[in-house]
Image 1 (cartoon, protein in one colour):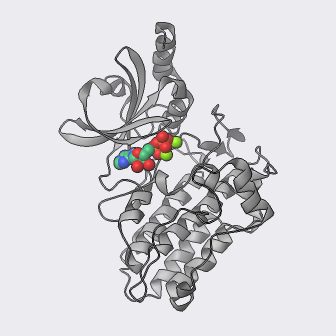
Image 2 (tube, helix red, strand yellow):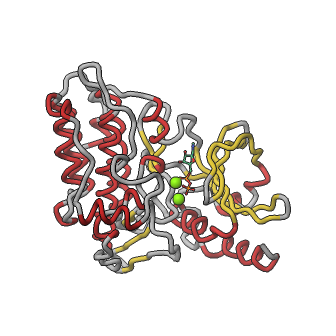
Length: 343
Ligand code: ADP
Ligand code: MG
Ligand code: MG
C-alpha cells in the first residue's frame, strides 16, 4: 500500500470509530498495540489473511492479520467490536485494532482473546460429545446469538446485529467447553432508535455452503433487517446438525461431516448450492438413532424449524435458547447450573 493509503487508514483508526472504544481498550492505547505484541505461531491461514497466536504482556492473544486488500473486512470487524455493549461471555472478546508495517507492507491487525481449542469445526473433528457437552455448546451459541440479534436501548445501548457468516469455523470453543461467536467481517447492524440499517461496505456475502435458500435464489429483501437475522437462524440450524452428529447415544456417534457433504463438492458454487437447497429442497439427513434418544430427537425437531424453507417459520434466537434449555432440563444427566445464564 502507498503511504497515502496508510495515512488514510491511520486517520480512520483515529476518527472513524466515533462511538469510542466500545468493547475494546481505549482508542489511544489501541494505537500502540501492535508494537507491544510478539507473534509466536500461525494458527490459521486463508484467502483473507492469517490468524496468529501472539504474546502481549505475558499473555497469549489471537492476532488476525488482514491483507490490506481486505481493508473493508478489517474496518467492519473493528467497527462492530467497537460497539458499546457488544462484550458478552458468548461473543469473542475484543482487545483492539491497530495497523502496522511488516516487510514494508501495511498490515491491519485485530486482536482478541485466544482460545487454544480453536474453532467448533476443529473441536467436532477431534472429539465426540456427551449430552452435557452438546447442550453447553448449543446453548452458549444460542445465548451469543440472542445477544447479537437483540437491540439494547439507552445511551450505552447496542444496535441489533445480524452475523451473516455463522458456521462452525466462525465459532470458537473455550476451555470450559462453551462457545463464543467470532468473525464479524460481514455483520450488519440495525437500530429502531435511528431507524437505520447499516449494511457496511463489504461486497462479500458469506459462505455458500451455509447460505439460506432466499439468499441463494436472491429473493431476500436486503433492506429488511429481520430477513437478515433469519439467515443466521438457518445457518445455526446447520451448526446444530453438525454438533448433534458428534453427540454420543448408546455408545455411538456419527463421524464429523460438513453440511451437504453428500450432495455438493468441496468448494461448492452458488449454482451447486441453489440446486440442492432451493430446487431439490434438500436438507441434511437425520440419522435414525436420533429418534430413540429424546434429547437428540428434540434437537432434530429444533434444527428443522431453524432451516425451514420459509424464513417466516424459523424461530427467533430467544425461542431457540429456551427450547434447548427446556430439552436439557428433562435430562437428569445434564448439569443445570446454567440457569442463571439462561433464563
Ligand atoms: P476469517 O474472517 O478469515 O474467516 P476468522 O476470524 O474466522 O477469520 O479466523 C480464522 C480461523 O482462525 C478460525 O476459523 C479459527 O480456526 C482461528 N481463530 C480465529 N480467532 C481465533 C482465536 N481468538 N483463538 C483461536 N483460534 C482462532
Ligand atoms: Mg472465518
Ligand atoms: Mg470472515
